[in-house]
Image (tube, rainbow, N blue to C red; front, side, top):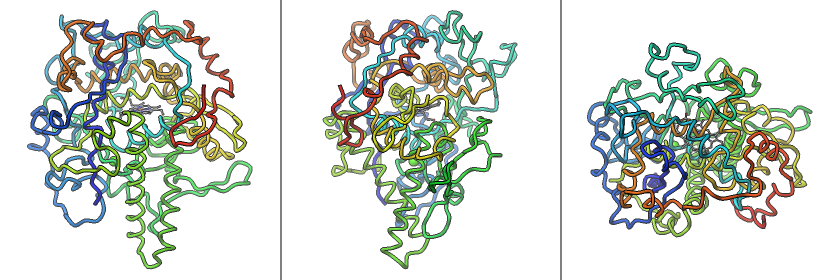
Length: 559
Ligand code: HEM
Ligand SMILES: [Ca+2]
């Protein structure tokens, strides 16, 4: 069994985004901090420095799992990858906390300011600091880099919001409503967007806790509902049952649907369609297509659905090649061997192509993240940390472009869509040559410039066609609120665990947060948000294409 230590446990990205509140001024900049520590000093190598509450689940609720040490293939739920502690990294086990939970009641209530008042509203933070600070320079990296990030995020993390309390903002008497509803995101009176829609509140559903898994723990403990290893679980599923439901049981292949395009001129293979009475895609009443895969978020946006479809085709292609070479292999062997190769490919792309760009080559090499330097330390808990999944990795939401380009084989822009117009509605994919065109679009379109804000559409109109109200939601506010929901500690605490001195003044923050970033003035910067939408829509095609793509995630020659 290939066992690789997940990198994000020892990555020290951190953001102040989720830690706003105690000092409003520290909101100035959204930043990633990458700490360069020596291995010897790294606290993350020793599980005994983690909060003791991490052990509570193990002591009280963890199932006894028997492993076969000679098993040739990974389990679907991730158990038995670590033979010392078989449940480490398994689905439906808790996120790891690098630091103690911070709640005002020590258990579950949102953190407060040091003077006991509420933290500034999440939406207010966005509107005051980020929403109007959009920069429109193009990146030298392509949009596929962003899409790969989401694809692996779904491989290692799923924190499910509790949707049993449907629309909190419809509830009038907030003092008598369920606790869940007391955590809605308030919309400031002068909100530049929602003001026009007369909205004062945005729904926010707190995440399900271990109590939903018959394991009530204090402080609130949150469960990862997918296998936490990079193992392709978003393709294959994180349980035996889901995995079996996705297989054809013929020649190692996954179930798929062969669909004709709208002109009946082209036949292509797609992920199987799900029965529309299930929860998947149900929030989008007007979608005709609804794919099924190992992860429930497959249909969330067109780019993610595209990668799922490409990997399904890759699996079935590889399985047929293996069958050709090994005529006597059983369905099971063909399936598992193909799955093993796909898992390795995903790790290879992640460690050798993605992370060196995200972290920088020096860092990636120093920590032995490139493939030839793999090592395995059975004492490292590989679980996805809350600090990573609820904060650090979400910073890369700032790479999401407002639009996706469909580019034809002559490298001309065929058409462009708003990402938020097609959420949970992947209907476009099986039409025409859209799979080819969107693939080319991800590869050939420069990514969104790295910056503190998220794009205007996901900051205002997320899921706009899936919600009862037509306006939609704000991903940046949701990310800030999610940090509070799961009890993330304040930024200063995280500095200390990463070996950086505590900041005692705002000047102390300058060591890792560049002073100037917030004052960047760009030619397209426009105070009027609605005008900037027009700018986005009119982006000149010449500027939106990469000149060539010698590297998987890199645009070349763009100025
Ligand atoms: C392509 C467009 C994307 C959309 C529309 C999107 C949207 C979302 C949404 C709605 C959530 C759940 C928010 C909540 O309720 O707490 C989420 C979670 C998350 N996103 Fe994204 N995202 C996108 C891309 C990305 C990218 C590029 C990355 C990283 C490189 C990323 C990393 C994450 C992570 C780590 C989580 C938490 C996952 C969990 O534990 O459940 N996402 N995203
Ligand atoms: Ca996984």
